[in-house]
Image 1 (cartoon, rainbow, N blue to C red):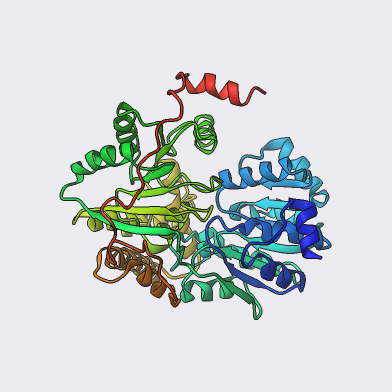
Image 2 (tube, rainbow, N blue to C red):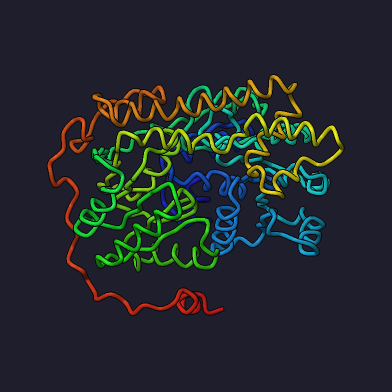
Length: 478
């Protein structure tokens, strides 16, 4: 039955590992925790279930851009009863959607919107068959991408009569899985835990003496080795610097970060997917919702802030199963920089004092965000805990979270730059056993000097350059 439905609705002949098992558990109305690798088709688990269940599927998703991408993709596949409810939906349009919410089969919603009274009222009129929580690791304060608004999802779920919950993520330790079970109020959930190892990805660490030498290494390497690829860096400034240097060397490349206009970012994604660009230099803003199977290289010019972040980013390589490469350029001071960056989004003690002072004066503490005295992420963390704990315990809680963040950086550095097999250590971190190792394993196990294949001869001359506005009109004429 499931294969017929898969063929009918998605035109696939077979399931990927884990998809069938997860869907079967969902159809039996079980709570489910599914750890499926990046690019393994997590979304199909709730999309196909939606066609086979009697009722609507509510999908909680943290990223607005990813949410919009999924909605548009489903519409292209012919599904019209799908909607995204987030901050993009305004005024009369939002009121109209909420008034007719029961007409939709798939309802995507941001965690912030999920807690709003107007949405809860509209949702109470809908027969819900399944609640899917995407990027479920965000619910855990020990996860690599903790988002306090995710903690309210469980409270919202409890307001409905018993509805099965499907929690989806690519990476989670046992500690994070326990938080998912706890905060989503799961009852004896079925668990599908995929192996984190990707045998077709070769890991290598390249020691670099000084930060400024990284750009020279990148230019020399990227010019002559296989593509497509993504270079991840920590700052918007570096994305532009690297992209400019590579472009001057004849590489078809673009910078990508949150400071670039939405239309231009959409164009860059399209060009990369279509093969008009060979490389993207990006902050971690790039990747979610980008469906490209043949990425051959992921390069980090910095130590990522956690194992979860690292695996999510390198996991974008080799989704077609072909040999791919993950390279880290490492200098001795990288860990210090990453530790500093990793705790930037946590409030300082003076923020806690200011929040308390404003609240006592009857002033909405959100004014701290409006006046740029605190980031919105920091405020959300602070706001959540100030409503849960006494002030002194809030300070202790946030300090503990910062300590854990720094500890994650230390753990990742030890794994990537230590003397033991990188692949084995990654599996051990997630408390999994590595049964076999590929020939091209990691730089600790030993790799040929020219392990990354050379670039094929350029198949065509460089395309005529247009402004992004002109190119956008060509690709999206309407």
